[in-house]
Length: 141
Image (cartoon, rainbow, N blue to C red; front, side, top):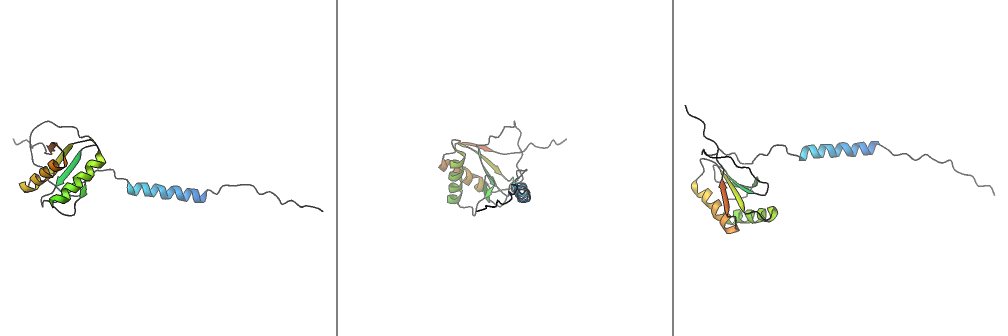
């Protein structure tokens, strides 16, 4: 009995699907990457003289806009209630880890009560080192 052999096909790798996947990954990373840190709240900082300090990555930041709305590490909160702010600070403290530092960035025209509420929430969570962000005053000649 005569056995016929099939001609061997050369093994090849199709590059077209690989290139398509690479381009899709490139587009995904370009869209999902942010290059500038922008807050969701527009604020105008109060002025104060003093020295500039470096900000560590493990610090929690609470931003308060002129309407008294809060954002914790650039995540806007759904309301301005104390329990919402405390819950957001607790979650962020778990993410950040061992840090007990907080920076409050509040608009210059915000009601004082909103800043005090942020300080009170920080105290409830155990954030004991609180800093307030300001900007350098413009020289008036």
